[in-house]
Image (cartoon, rainbow, N blue to C red):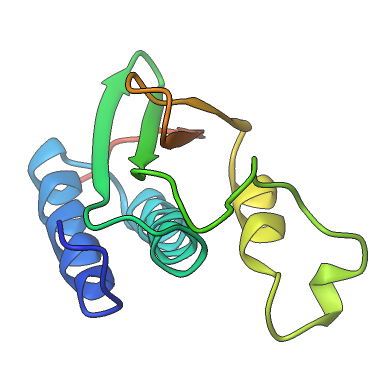
Length: 127
């Protein structure tokens, strides 16, 4: 998707539709949507990317979220900043860490960009 702020709600809508198709329960959908929003927003704000990719995979009892940027803009590996929970900006990765069983980042396949990933627990909706 284009690396623009206007792409963030579209990414969230697509993720929501996919999770509904997978039968995820409401809490899972809410948590995954929030993590995607935070990671996608960071890629748009902190890199010089023209495009940002977002992939979800159901792996056993987990959902793997991967958001990949093209690099640029002096972006380094993401990390939670001390005291960020009390600041208006900087809470995103704290939330990602709180909602995820694990998360991290790695260089993308080109070596220029970065993929930030997060694993969240998956439970199906009960009918």
